[in-house]
Length: 506
Image 1 (cartoon, rainbow, N blue to C red):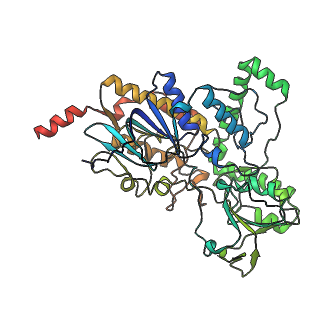
Image 2: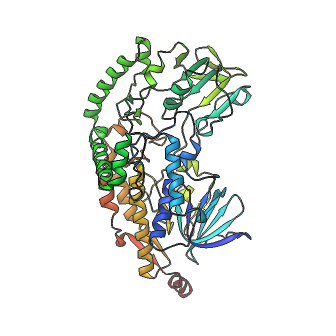
C-alpha cells in the first residue's frame, strides 16, 4: 500500500483535477461542462492561461499550423488575420475562449503540481502543489503538455557570463537589444522566428548552429475583411475551409514518413536554399546532412535571407566555454557578446521533465521506475498501474504534419468515455490491462520503423537510445478511428470494497 500523503489545511475534494490551462486543459474543462460535470479544478503554475503560448512571447513567435486548424472545432474563429497566426492572436483566442465558457471560476493560478499519489483503498488521487494545497480527486488529468520546461544546456562557464542570458521561453522584453552584440544558440523552431526579427536591431548577431534545419516557405497571406465577414455570416464556409486545410495537411503524412519522398522533397528544399542564400559557403553549412523530415521541418520566409545581412554570422564550430564577455568555440575563436539567447527548445522527454515529480500508482508502482527505459502509455492517454490517470499529448501522440488540437479533442472525447464507463460500471477506478498497453506500443514502434523519423538523425522525437517516444506514426484520422470508442475489454474495472473483502479473506 502506498504511504498516505499528508493532506494540508488547504485540501479540496473534486471529481476531476486537471493540470495545465493550455489548449488541453481548457478543452477537457469545456467538455466536462458540456457533459454536466462542474466538479473539477484546473491547476495552473503560471499567472495566466495559455500554456506554451503564455510563456513563448519572444519576437516573431507564431504558429506553424494554419490558424483555422489550430483552434477548437467547437469554437471557431471567423476573423483570423493570417493563414498562420502570430502568438498574440492565439493567446487572445485562448483568453476569449476562457471568458466564453466562464472557466476562470475553475482555475487556481500559481498552483504548480509537484506530486501525485493514488490511494488504492479509496480509489482516489492525492495531488499536492508547491503552494501547499492538496486536492483529493477521482480522476487526474495531466494536460501540461511536453512544451513547458525550457531546455537550458549545461555549457561550461555560462554562469560567469557578465552580460544578459535568457531563454526564448523566458524572453525579457525589458532588455533592449538595439546596438548589442548577440549570440543565439540553437536553430530550432523558436530561433528561426526570433533571429530574423532581432537581426535588423542588433549590432551583430552570431547564430550558433549544431545541425542545420530543413526550412520551407511560409504562407504569409492574410484573410481579407470580406472573407472574414463571409466566414462569420456563413459558418459552413469556415468549416469547409477548415476541412480543406485538414485534408491538405493529412496528405503530407505519406511523404513525411516515406524515405523515397524525403529524397525528392530534400532536393527541392536544397534548391530553395541556393535561391535564398547568396554565399555558397553558407549554403553548404545551412544544408542539412540528414533526410528531409527526420527532424521537425520548419517554416519561414525570413530565415535564409537573414544570412545575407552583413551583421549576421553563422557559427558551426562547437562551444568550448563561455567567458565573462564572450563565447569561445572549439576552433579557439572568442565571439564577443553582450547577450546570449538560448534558443534550445524544451525538455520533451517526460522521464526528464517529471524527474522531480513523484507520481505513484497502485501498490509498488512508481512512474519513474516504470518509465526508466521508456515512457509508454495506451494511445498516449492511460498507463497500466495508474488508475483513473489520463494524459493529453502523452507518449507517441505528437505530430509532425497536422494540428495537435485535433489530437487533443480525440483524447478528451476518449477520457470522457472512460469516466462514463466507470460510472456505468459502478466501479471506483479503471486500469488499462498491461497486455493491451504492451501490444499497442509494440505496434506503434513497428509502424515507425522504416519512416524518415527513424532514418538515422538525432531529434527531440527520440530518447537517447534512439527510440521515438514522441510521434504518432500515421494519419490523425486513423487515431480518431482508434479512439472514438473505448474498448472496455482493455480495462479492469475495480470496486474498492471487493478488493478489501478479498484482502480480508486472504
